Length: 82
Image 1 (cartoon, rainbow, N blue to C red):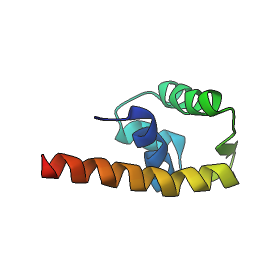
Image 2 (image 1 turned 90 degrees about the horizontal axis):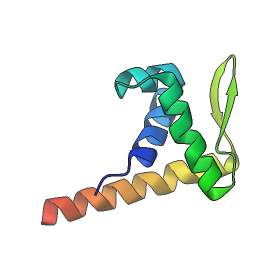
Image 3 (image 1 turned 180 degrees about the horizontal axis):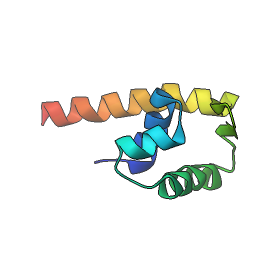
Image 4 (image 1 turned 90 degrees about the vertical axis):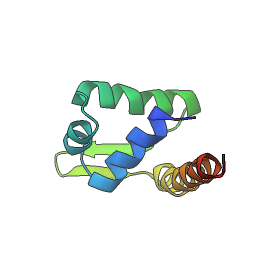
């Protein structure tokens, strides 16, 4: 079980840049932006703030970073156990 949205979101969080995250994931910045916007649309919440100085996260975005890491760690634990 793999969640592209969470993985993409966490790559942006780790690298602090849409461009760097897109490069690391071998995708266009436009595709990455669409993936993040789909999270925001699904949950009806803004998770990232885009500016000329880079990416910052809203309170909800910071919460999602914490929880997404827990979710992906849990999924890895399940894979390792199976």
